Image 1 (cartoon, rainbow, N blue to C red):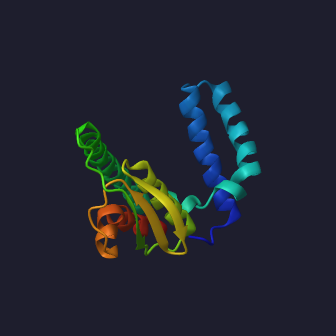
Image 2: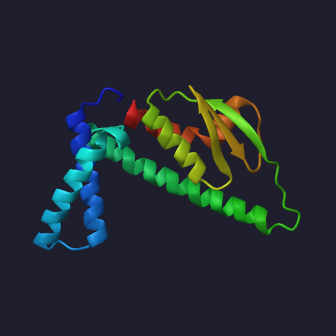
Length: 168
């Protein structure tokens, strides 16, 4: 996925920016749509090299299916983690065991690693501290396992299985 053409990146960025424009303006008035197309094109031309790690290939039907699946896996992990952290916070003894854990990822693409890191950080109770090559270092609010394979299964496996199908 690293060798995506600049044209593909440009159009991908333009499409995403235009969708955001439509969402914020919440109208399909012709003036707004044309303005949105032009403004998003200008912004895409100025920024796609800096902010886009993927291209139009992400809109393939198979990848869209996996993106939707990823969304539901992420929401499920988010809800589960929120309840777990709420239980910890509401407990009078505050039963935490914080620490830094690590695991190795199978992801090759920097973009996919960034998505995994952000997904981990957005899930309450975990925070991606660093990524060194293929090793992730995660601050975990309640370290329940320490061996690398178990850490991977607890924190990243659900996300990574789908990311491998999307970005690799």
